[in-house]
Every structure is written in C-alpha cells, then in structure tokens.
Amino acid sequence: MVNSAKKGKRAEQKVAKQLKATRKAGPNNPDLKKGKDRIEVKNYKNSLTTAQLRSAYAQNHANVIISAKGFTEDAIEYAKKHMPKVQLRKGLKGKSKLVKRRK
View: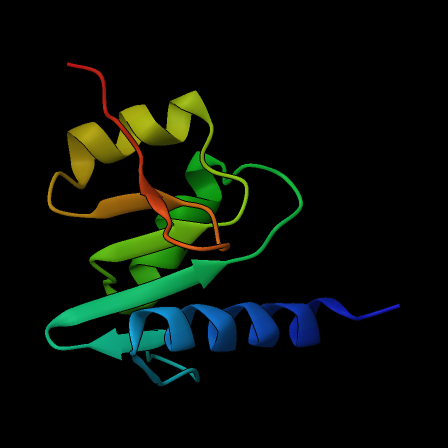
C-alpha cells in the first residue's frame, strides 16, 4: 500500500509533467510553479473542504489549486467570496477542469 506522502508526490510529478511546470515542493513553497502561477496539488480521496482549501492557500498563496476529487460546495462558495483570483481545478488525469462558481 502506498503512503499518502508518496501518493501526493506522484500526483505532483504527474501534473508537473502535464503542465510543463517546475516542481517546487517544500515548506513555504507551492507544489508547482509555471510562469507566475503558484500551483498547489491535492490528491485526497474526498473533495477538498473549506478548511483544507484555506490551509492550502495560506501556506503559500497559491493562485491555482488542483484537487483530484474536486471541492465541496461550501469550499467553492468560500473561494468565490474570499479568494476571487484563485482558480479551482478538478482532476489529475489529462487536463484538469476549471470549477464553475455560481453567481
């Protein structure tokens, strides 16, 4: 069985290859960087909650957050109100899809 750190690292490497981004993981660094984009990759088995989203953003002010399973409705609403410039993307396979925020 693969531990969560290895699973997360593999997800970061996969997304870095797809986006042609540089992997920067470590304390106070985003997982990936491409141009001016600071990208955080989350490979959890459930949708990202508001608390997890806030934590991912607070650690390094990522402007793109990619989640394997997507985001809870509350997390999407929170991002809409408090993080309007942060892109939320769902999926690690192929191209991730931009999460639609309801108006």
